[in-house]
Length: 371
Image (cartoon, rainbow, N blue to C red; front, side):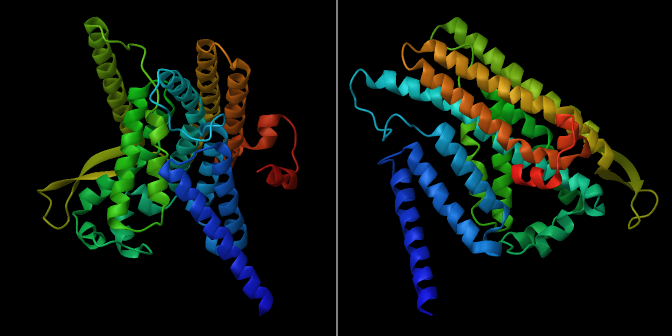
């Protein structure tokens, strides 16, 4: 009994330490990469100790996001982000923004992986409720912790619920690619769509901090600057045209994706007789077509993420007059983190199996150790 009491006291002490460090970071008193890694290590300790109670998706996601934030995004050369009001503060702040833009790429890629895999596994499950877009007709009544608005959402017309499932597929699969665009406007479109989805989930159900964490990961998608920046009227005019063009391209891309994923037809309504027709909306993408999509796009997406990260890092390094080596090392670390984060993608398709990618047979036990 004494040993269990000591173990419980130790866990409570570790939890209290994590609470104190998290408060210090969130309040802005001190922010450093080591502090983020410390609280991530503490939570990873609780995940390992908690066993089945800490094996939910949000627990693993928090460890991943905390690690990437500590290694790639958080400041390392200063203990605090608070700057003095002197003339040199703007220079330090500018360098911090450039480094954060490089460090935001791994977090964007983690968010892309989360949403894309969430959408793809629904199609790969080959479940009739997802194929017929009827999942929400059961979801609100069968989820573990429904919210106060879940009952009202369950009473919606079946067509509205099917449109909700279709919107979920659009946000999780094609809109996820917008999170990795090299332009800020396109990334903002993808980020706001993800935030909209998470807000709707929060209104109808409780999934711990998962939705809040997902929305927080959308913030790095809004970091960056466009090519047309300045105070001159001509530049502002071209900037508005450029942003409007990006919004139009995003709209066309999502519309094209909808035509590829869904099919609609007019069918007779059995409740009102043969004279009245209703729209039948369902998922047209099959499991094999989804696997082909993964095989064609994921390797190129990972490569583009690495290229964009390297290009952003090189651009940031060229703007600096000092500490260029540290900036290059930071860029290499961010690229390495993206490569490691991409490892779970191989589970989405047999053609992305390591034996296919590496060109030789890899022992399954060894591959599990790598994962």
